[in-house]
Length: 267
Image (tube, rainbow, N blue to C red; front, side, top):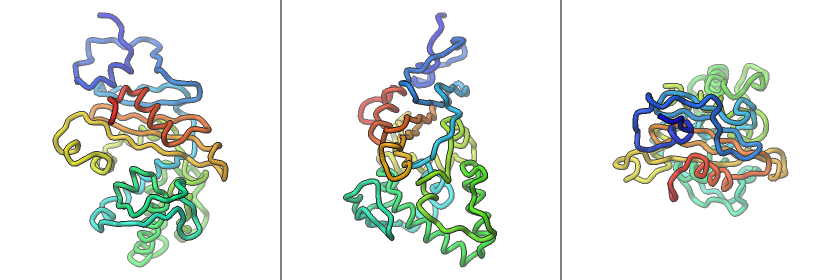
């Protein structure tokens, strides 16, 4: 049997057995300069392409961590947010705003202001229920994989600024680091929630092997041109994390993810 590119294998939607196809010694993914990709496929193997271990500001990926931490609570509350392009002195990446949005629309549109407003309300509830020390521990535990040694000093809960929803340098990860976090069985509920929020009712409940994808920018300072882009997705067999270099945004991240992972048009 001839050698096959493992990227083609793990992205195949047919679910055929991979045991008989030995991987090549040096697989190559169709990446552009500066891109990094980490993925796992139905064969249980992890594939890494480009500098997938290099850390960057995690940007929109922070929304997935908040989904794990508070997504079930927000979903039960049917949270809503009116994004006008600014809130409490902070600006949305979309100057005209996203309008009135629910949790799924905020995730689809990467509305950091909605996540900031909801997270601030959540930590206010934690302070009432647990007190500042336990509330701080709850936040630190949830974001530990992305904090390094950058947790603000002190014993009390730090202020919930835009850094906690992906702005700036506080939360960082790599393509491989984010993939490993997603592959942890503790994230099964988070992935299922993201899939439900990002797919239509029919796709989520009936169709098999449908791709869910979220893509967004990781801002770097005041100049959007210095930001980079992330794209994350899966189809029940494959989970993949793609990072694009400086100057790329949400649209480019989504387009490159579809091209590299061979996601059918419209998914």
